[in-house]
Image (cartoon, rainbow, N blue to C red):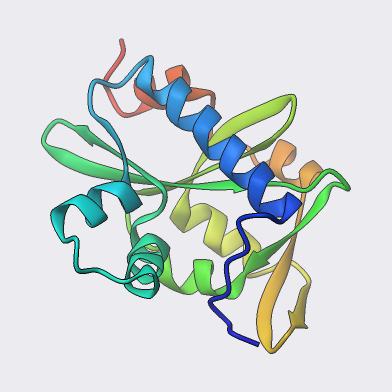
Length: 165
C-alpha cells in the first residue's frame, strides 16, 4: 500500500477538509493574511507534484498567517465522530518549531489552537499503534478538552499572537 495514499472520497478526509475550511474561514475573520499553504506552494511552483506538495504540507501545515512579518503555520486536526483519531507519528517528527500550531476540533467543538511543541510532547506519551506499517498515537477528544495550554477559537489565538488587543 502507498504510504502517501490520499482518498479524497473517504469520510475521514471529507470531515477533515470541512474542518480545515471552517478553521480557515474563522481565521480570515481575524487575520488579514490567511493562506492555504498547499495552494500557495502550488501557485509559487506549478511544477510541484502531489507527492512534493504532500511533503511540504507535512512540514508547514494547512494554513499560514503572517503576524508582524513572521509566518505562523497551522495544521488542522479533526477528531473522528467516535471520539478517537489516529495521530501520525510523522506529524510529531515533521511539524515542529515555535511558529507551528495545531488547530484541533470536531463538529460542535473547536478549533482549539495548541502550540506544536506542546502537542507533540503530549502525543508522544499517548498510546501508540501501527496500521499498514505506519506508526500512530491515539488522539482522544477528552484529552484535547483537558489540555490547558492553547487558545479556544481564532480570536483568542489572534490575541495570543498580538494581532488583537
